[in-house]
Image (tube, rainbow, N blue to C red):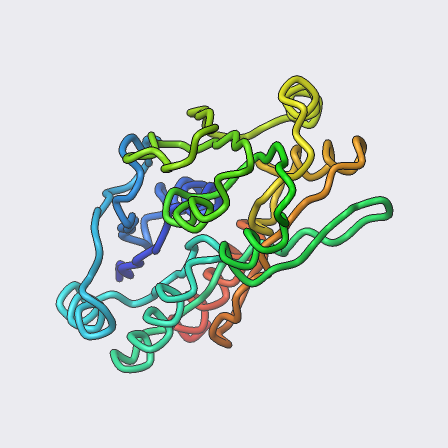
Length: 253
């Protein structure tokens, strides 16, 4: 019997998980992407792009496609998607498993200021002009227009359109991973004195955190949102092990 698995993705771990399961005869995998990135990387399994239409739409999809297992491997800050996934899985009677990378932990000499969101980050920057690296998604940039006194270096995977309505903003298009030495060179070259970022976890974007620590630069870091209490694994290998355990239980092994 082939089990249909839907992976809610958009992260490196989701792609790696799909790669790890792609050749398994027991599974038929579909990877779902939100469609916000203009040029996503290639994936080893069929990809569905776009939203489902909330909880009801996802419930209908799970039932129509006869999904056996739903894996939430979305970004740690995709709180609404994770909440919808948990509710839809419960309503559809489908097993759910979350792949959630652990957050970064404060280390000695880190100068972290923890905030709830972009508005709070703007307040934390203060009124005095600063040179700021914004390492955020395009959706979180709008509030920084209320603080035009700062000079912004904005790094994103896709172009920021329209650009921020501030007098001093420079844009870099780049996709991680970012090494610590390169991040340090960037911070020094651009004379950055504050970094604004999410606590994404993992290694791909940790370079800026480590580089800021070494240079004594403040990092204004978004707190992790509260996510649904579902069965969780924190690595790709642990997720595959959990899937194998679930498959064995389904077969009565």
